Image (cartoon, rainbow, N blue to C red; front, side, top):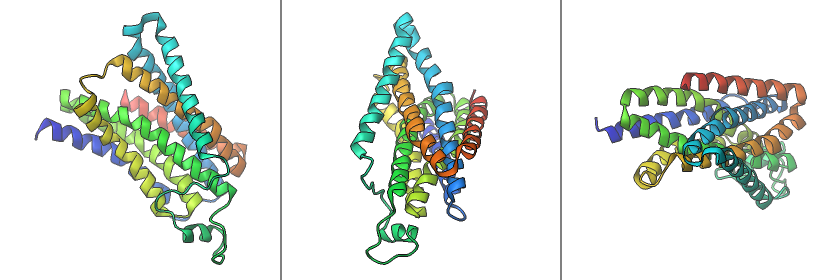
Length: 277
């Protein structure tokens, strides 16, 4: 088989695991407050683990050869830029704006109000907050998946056996990420379709990153530039976790359930990163 097709297929396989995780998030009954808090706590554990155990070390390693002793400062600036970028996005969305995700219908919102009549509001303040949580989580994980897809693709082009092992490890790594996207979207909209759609869009970032990276950016990409991108993405994901996921989880399910979910998320990522290494 053509190496390009093989690399693209393996990258798509790794990305599809994100969608599989989203599918797990929509099966069965809609999650209650405790299940939601557990899922959001797990999402925070996933994103913080990825940020500090994978992205930040990769950022330092990538910038060190070119920038030397200035590398940690450059990574810190990139990280802070990610935090600032998230703050700008969050203020743009607004705490009182009803963010509507593609695939959600008015009837989905009325079902959240117990089947009220035509004048019933679509969701409430908590639902709007969860929509924002789902959106920014999908954004953060999608941004993380872009360079991840390029790395899997490039490794496969260089050595298909290495690429196969990397794609399998990425797939394990991506399942809890898809779950982290789907759970808050489903809870906020009552729509399995919306949850799967956003998990699918996040999954698509993996092969998209491969194609864009290889066809457009490959001649210009350096380890230092990728390192800075990793630092910015880490800042975004940390901000999402601390400002959205953990507060929302604790408000709905309490400290203990949130902590249990957080530790499950950390454990899942540590194990997957161990396989990846």
